[in-house]
Image (cartoon, rainbow, N blue to C red):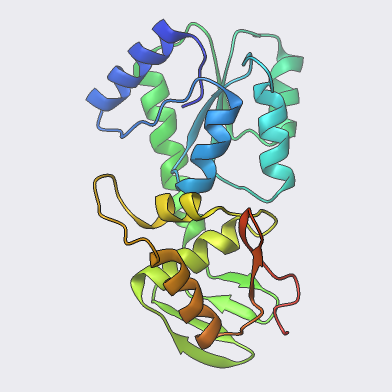
Length: 218
């Protein structure tokens, strides 16, 4: 959930948690962007009136870069043209403030059901095909077996294919809170992926992290 109003954010988080949801609450666009890189979410509850980069700009950027996570927009703007605009930007649903928590919960569950039916697909990137159901990939027509964490790190790259991912962001994607992360864990996983797939598939961006090579046949 991305909401800068402290009272609303706190109460909505508590309410959704009582309804059985796990909620990561962020108060601005920077926090939202960091969370989107390091974790996968079933849905996003997005306020439009954020400080700095607005919710509309965030939504536009996510859709432009291929992020298809379902977005439910919270807005104080109740006019039909406002609703049409956010839906055309790529929102999947919207609620006008003030809203009822039970309705928000029901709409989120509906988005989750819809996304679950659409998300069970393989990810493709040039000559690379990553299986959704198994820890396997196909590269240039050959099957490659992956460990659970190799599969997860490759999936993270494929879902952020136009971005440079820092070591910290990759660690957040691979390990849960409280897990001990060995100092060279990310380097080992990337080394193994390069060995199994292609040495040039994942590029090192000096001082910044790693990114997918756009030429996966290299």
